[in-house]
Length: 242
Length: 233
Image (cartoon, rainbow over all chains, first blue to last red; front, side, top):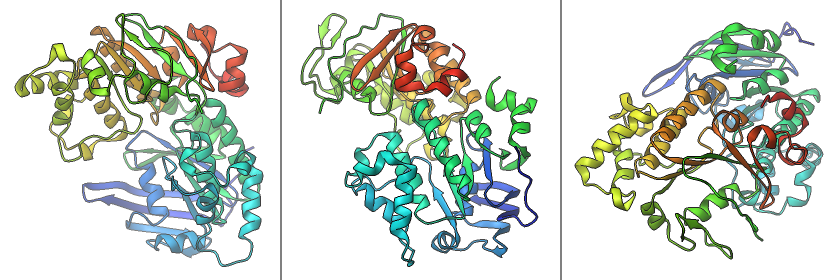
C-alpha cells in the first residue's frame, strides 16, 4: 500500500540549493516526508544525495530555499539544534567511535537529551538489535560490519528522532545482513519514525520505501510511489541495470 | 582467536576468482595473509611454486602480487596521474622503471580503468567510483601477475557496477589473474568463473558461482532466503 502525503508534511524542503567551494551541488530541490513515511533517495554517485542529507542535518549550508520540520522553519539551523528538533543522521560508513564501547556509542546519540527516558530508549534499541545485547561493553571497532551498522542506526534512534536519515545502509554488508537491517528499518518506521533511506542497492530501497525521489546532477528528476519509480523505464535502465 | 582457520585453495593463472562470505568471515584477513600484511600462525602460501609465507608486503608486491584496500588512501595532495605513478615506481621487481617510464605506464593504466581524462585532476575532486578506479589503477600500475581486489565495487549502483566490471575484464585481458572480494552477486556472477565462500574462517563451499549460490548452506550462512530468490545465477 502506498501512503499519500498527509496535508501537513513532517519535513518540507522547497527550492533548496547548496554546494561547496568547488561549485553548486543541489539545484532547487523540493522534497516532502510525511509522518511515519519511508522515503527512498536514489541516484548515481555524485548526484547530491549525501549532500542533501548533509544540508538536512545542518552539516552543509543551504544557499537558497527552505527546510521546514513539523511546521517550523529550520533552514541552516545548527546540527545540534536539528538533532534536538528531531533529525538524526546515520552517516555513510557508520562513523562510530571505534575505541569506545558499543554502549557509549549508543549513549552519544542521546547526548543532548535531558529527559529521563534515555534508558528506556536504550532498551528499545536493543529490542530492535538483540545481537548487540551481549556486546555493549565491546569496543565498537571490533564488531563486524553488520553489527557496526546496527550500532550506527541505534545511535541515531537514541536521539529519539522524528526523521531518521540512513546513508548507504548496505555498504560493504553481506546480503543476508542487508535484508535483516531492512526489516529492522521497517519495524522502526512502523513504530512511527519517518525515514529517509539513501541507497545504492536501488532495488532494496525501492522495495522498502513508500515513496522515492530520483536525483540526477543535483536535481529531482522523478518522484512518486516507490513501486512506480521502480517500474519507470529510465530508472530500470539507468540505476537497476535491467 | 583465529580469523582464518585451515583455509586451502588454489588460483590458476588467468582465472578470476571471487571470495564471498558473511562480514567477519575472514575474507580481508585472507587477502592480508597473501599480501604479507598479516602474519600466518600456520600453513603455507605458495606463489609460482615457492613459499611467500612471512614475506613483508613490499617484497610480495615486487613478486607481482598487487592489491587494493577497502578504505582507499590516495595521496591527497597529488594528482590522479601521480598517484598511479607511485604504483609504477614501487611495483614488480622485474618490471621496475625510472620516473619517466613510470609516468608513461601510469598514463596507460589510467586509460585501462577509464580515468585518463582526469589524469591531472587533484584526487580530492574524484567521486567515490573514480576513487575506487584510482585504487585499482595504483595496484595495476605495479604490473601484478595477480591482482587482489577488496570490495572495489561497494557503494556503486548496478549501472556503475557494470562499468566497473568492464574495467576488471579489461585489466584481466592484459594477462592479470584476479582474486576479488565482493558482497555484490552481480559481480560474482558477472566475471568470476569460480567462487570461494568463507564462513567463520573456514571454506564453506567453492565452485562455479551458479552452483555455489544455490548451495543451501551458502544461502543459510550468507545470502539469506530473500536475496537468494532475487538473484538469477
